[in-house]
Image (cartoon, rainbow, N blue to C red; front, side, top):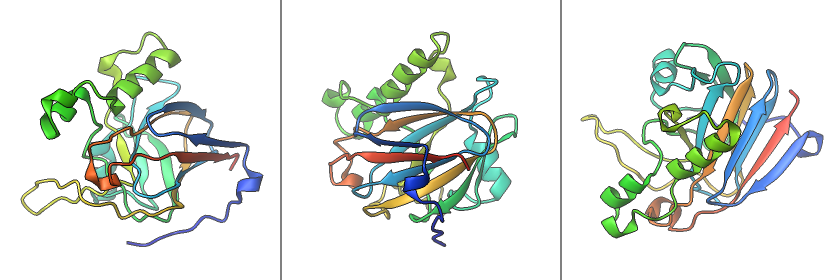
Length: 213
């Protein structure tokens, strides 16, 4: 696991925002622009979707991405591919080391199954994604939800194929940086999950910074 730092300075950025836990964020990145996601307090799950902004039916594909790089985990050098195989983004710096793309996003149903049926009503990432999609384009519906990436989440896969939602490997101030290779729509749900021990039951804010290149 190699950690690659970025040469970019925050004072040169064109965009800088603090996103509290539980909130969503939508942004259209132009080709060449670079997005940094900063895990301000450590082990925060940042659930993220990517779409081809010029063809919203073509969205991020975990299968195409994993197959293309022959590795389950995402880190520097990973090219995020759409269902069509189109390259949407490339991870160009990473001080965490690896990120999950097979664990999925939390939902009312997963809250009930993983924690307790009485917790199905609690805020979850799937609902945040739906709210962001509907605000972006009211033609988008549940069927337009796509596979996501869980930045800073540690989900090791055992030899028998089982998953474990393990303690995080991130830390305060660690970040991942992605260069847009196409006109790309980015949706983030900064996870509101209060029931997952990975983040010590304490969802925290993240910082989003964008450069022109």
